[in-house]
Image 1 (cartoon, rainbow, N blue to C red):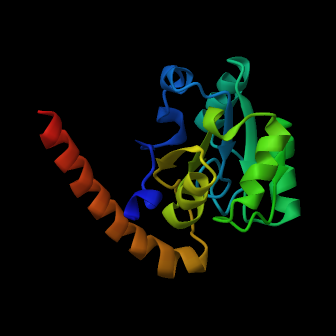
Image 2: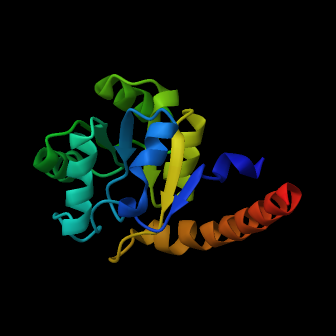
Length: 174
């Protein structure tokens, strides 16, 4: 039951996601959450290393997009900087917005990754939509009050379970 909350990949930051691994998985499109994943919630600018990585992905032929629960103005302005499609007011974790984003990219769920910093919106939604989910550590900056008070404490419990689950899997392989 909890597996629906587990990401397929965990990375300390967006820039640590290995491009070679994405290719091995057959990934052609990558959807990104916005706040605290590719930009800080309190900023409208990409950290330089994130912007460089996103441009590198595009040069490598990956199709990029944004799926965010944020409003149109914020999402459009940031997506416009990269000239990539975006879905605003996504109401994650519901799958409808992910399906809409897939149509925008022209990719199928099995060839698309979702990168996000929250388990109960990004990872759950991506898993429900059949995407390759990648959980990253949130960027520095403030969290939405609901995330800070509800989601983040619950995420700590899920991450502890995930850690135990992966330890058991590793023991079975040895």
